[in-house]
Image 1 (cartoon, rainbow, N blue to C red):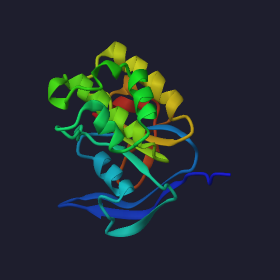
Image 2 (image 1 turned 90 degrees about the vertical axis):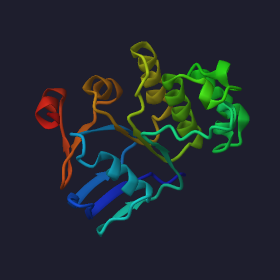
Image 3 (image 1 turned 180 degrees about the vertical axis):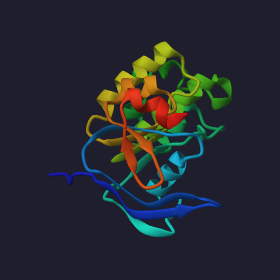
Image 4 (image 1 turned 180 degrees about the horizontal axis):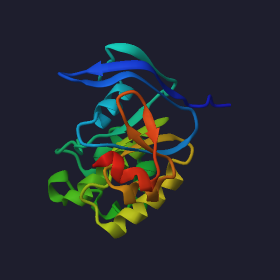
Length: 207
């Protein structure tokens, strides 16, 4: 039986020129999608980089038992000399699986195109497809819907809810409609902890 995935911050402090997190604590031990909200500059992307190990805390500790973490960065980070499909198979050599993800995101018709040939919305969907293909135990999706039109966004939300049902998936968004469509688990990042919020609380904490 597979071990249940957990993610935990224990009294983590991290600073740049100012303190971003101070004796920060949180724990995720249930599968599902969690939306992380907060004012610009509050440390949401830093929070993700600490989870992934790209940054290390000055104090405290971060624990998880994931063998792999899928990270969709704010930037698409696609290899410009590779086709769409080749960008996928870089992280997962199961070509048929990669093709199936492209099909579900309505991208199969562009599998042989280079990133330079794609629109901004398509690039974002390809970057998301690549993160899905990596198939981590924990998913970190930083603003996954940037540049994507409303109708397509609704299709992708449905796809993510089915595909990531048995993963821990954290999603950064500034859009309350996206957050509430994705999940009932809404949190605002604060210096010491994640505060559970409702849609009605959103304006108070973001503005």
